[in-house]
Length: 353
Image (cartoon, rainbow, N blue to C red; front, side, top):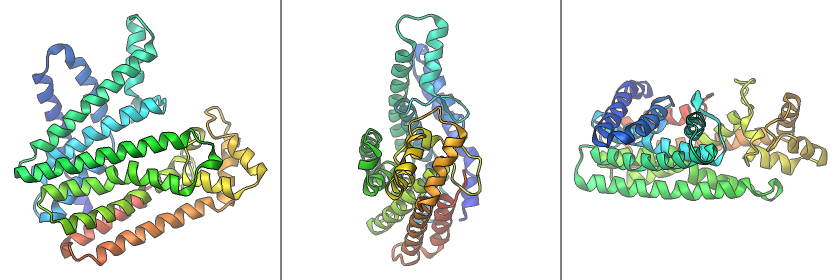
């Protein structure tokens, strides 16, 4: 199987999500349907569907069979992604997501338009949190829907439990890092967040969930975990480069991560490697949503001139090389499955969007 073959499943994945939401809509009291429609629209608004596709890949890697039967479980990961994004948007005070308003901002506006009692922002946050919570049981339902043996479902639920815990612990550390002065955040702090918050739920656990549903043995699951963690951290480091507007292929890309003050490896290394004047240029942008284009470009120059960007690129390449070596030296992987994992690695690590 090639990655392009996996991409062919996206239309069926969207159909599965539509079906799951429609089934839930029929099941619930009509009073709840407008809320369900909102979370359905948010989930189906767009997205790369990386995690769902990786679950399908993990299933094929484990058993070599058509992964279509586990599409409900793959769709479940999109429900999980919704849960994470809705809550992340509230934490980050985000205004937009996937080309539209964030869920909590949408309900804030509805409250204001309808002239309801209380504060519109508090109403929006309350509804947003609760709708994010609702996506969690929809995730579990999708995993349980997969037509596999009961013991595989139980093992998949255990993996889901682990993924959820690790992601939450990573989020706690990420919030803590964001509240910590830049000079007190270390590289190890950043990489630990990437491993817990991003690598598990973006790569390692989706692959393992699919493999578990496909009947994988423990040795293969362990190898997929290590591969997935390396690729997942590299994926997030690449995301940090893109989010700072530093990717050579997208010179005009937004530098939102800088003005939001995110404690990325780029920022930490630049702060450590520059002088007081350089730190002043960084400080003029970090947590400064009104920073001028000139100030942002100046901060980017600091990141480049200190070697911080080059350091992140080197880190990405080292992780990518290690992940590929794990595949090439594997004793648990079917030989036919290796090219797909290598392609997944490069597509996630070297993406430009």
